[in-house]
Amino acid sequence: MSSEGARVWIVPDGFIPERSTGGLESHEAICVLNTSRRDARISLTFYFEDREPVRGEGVVVPAERTRHLRTDRPGEIGGAEVPRGMPYALRVESDVPVVVQHSRMDTGQEALALMSVLGHPVER
Image 1 (cartoon, rainbow, N blue to C red):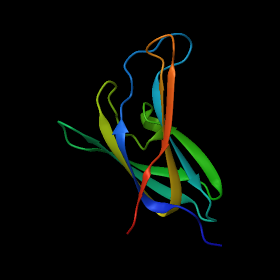
Image 2 (cartoon, rainbow, N blue to C red):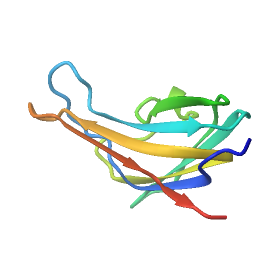
Image 3 (cartoon, rainbow, N blue to C red):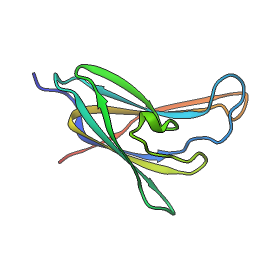
Image 4 (cartoon, rainbow, N blue to C red):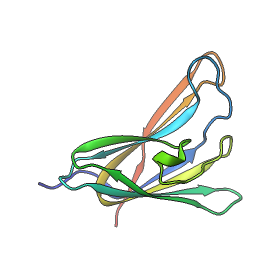
């Protein structure tokens, strides 16, 4: 069985909001879908406008499963520390094809905003 997706995905617009209101915390998450019969080993690279990239490694998405990774929780993204309130871009690399979706929940004001987009798959 072949799997769907790509081995490299780019998300050009990341930003973890600094402020939260109400009972929900502002955050971003990466949803990785692995339809293959092999576990996917994921590495993440976060790029910034004015500093060196930050890398996270050792993330595993089990075979035929999905995993949601909060970018504000280093333990979920291979130890990478992503600062709040700073724009970033993200590169997701996997050893098997996966599908990547990126979501932002901004609760900085009463009328919260939720945004979700597919990453851009890179052909290799």
